[in-house]
Structure formats: C-alpha cells, structure tokens
Length: 274
Image (cartoon, rainbow, N blue to C red):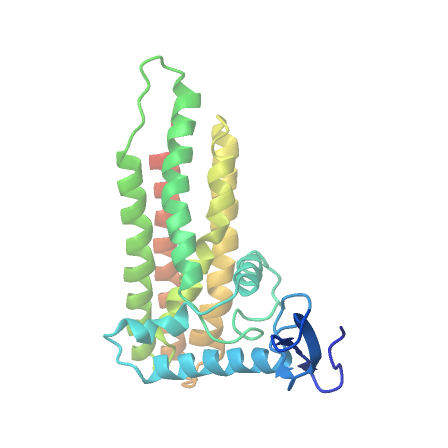
C-alpha cells in the first residue's frame, strides 16, 4: 500500500471482524480516514517538524536572555552551539593571516562551551603529557606519577580563563568600550587551543623541540589575541586621541606579558627535565 504523496497523509486499512455469518472471520472493508504523516520513510523529520524545532530553540534562547544573570537559565544560550561551529572556531584560531576575518564576523555570537572545553582538555592533557615527558627523560625505576601537576594545571588554566578576561573587561570599560564579558572570555579561551597539540609535541625528550613548539604556540596565540582585541582597543577606538590609543597599547602589552608568563610556566614546570 502506498502513501498519498500529494497530500502527505497515510491511508489506513480498516479491519472488520464478522461474527454473524458462518465461516466469518477477519476481512478488510476499505480505507478509513487518512492519518497525518509525521515522519518520512528514512526516519527523519518533515519540514514542519524542523520548523517546530527551530521555533523551540529560538524560544529557548529568548527565555535565556530574559532570565536573571544569577540563574543557570541565563547561561544556557552561551552553551547552545553545534559541533561544526566549535570545530570551525578552533581552526580559525590557527589562522595568522593579517587579512583573515575577525573571530565573530562570520558565525555570530560568542560561546562559553569552547573555552571551557579547551581549558579542561589542557588541564588533563598537560598533567598527563608532563608526567610522560618526565618518565621519558629520567627513565628511573622508582618513577612515580606526580598528581600535583593536575592540580597546578587546573589552577593555571581555570584562573587564567576567569581572572584575565574579567580584568580585560574592566579595562575595556575604562576605555569606553562595550565589549561583553562573555566575548572576552571566549576570545581568550579559544586562543589557548594551539597549546593542545603543543603538549603532545613536548613529550619528545628534546629541549630544543620543546622550546620551539612553546614559542610557536605563544606566537600563534598572541597573533589571535592582538587581531581580535587589538582591532577593538586601537583601530576601532571611538575616542581617537593619542592618550586613549596609548592606553590600548599598554593593555595589549599587559595581556601578552601575562600570556607569555603562562607559556613559560607550561615549559618550565611541566616540560623541563634534564
């Protein structure tokens, strides 16, 4: 039996039980009223269902915007992001071309899922690869796993993803900028992504390779920060006087100085073995 393709309805056969005649039994008396078809033959959703899901998602985002900042519902909108968007943003942090688009020009609002994922991955990966590098460098029979590397990595990255963006956000407000705190957190959090492959490279028991990988990662990450925050505090500064631009340069210098300190901590604490 084929469905009515034009109306989008599936006809249903009506089963009749005849008990009044000898030899009566089950029989088909015809078709009843067609039922609406909700899914297609491949198990997917129809166009109406897609539209309904989009409306529900949009309504959820609107409810999150109206919620209080102190409630968890408010932060739901910053974690509502697809895997494709996450991967695209991670790859764009590695683009050092000067004419490449800014971080949120193409795909809209900032998110907090990506920075949280990057920091959490760095915490566990830095502790694991740091211990592996120690083992390969010492090859001592009495080697033991250093659990303090995990707590130190958590302190470094979770504090940097919170304290540094909050400080930058306050400084931007002093410079008459209205950049949101979530956007600053997102930019700085994504800038740390390049250190994830660096952890794996630094497992190699070669100090030169480790220093080169740390320096390259710091350079790529700094270019991403300067391109996105520098464009705001210097190029698109609403107050064009020299004093405000000087403060913008000082702010960028402080950010990069702190960023360099974090990179040095990564090298000297996790991957410095004789």
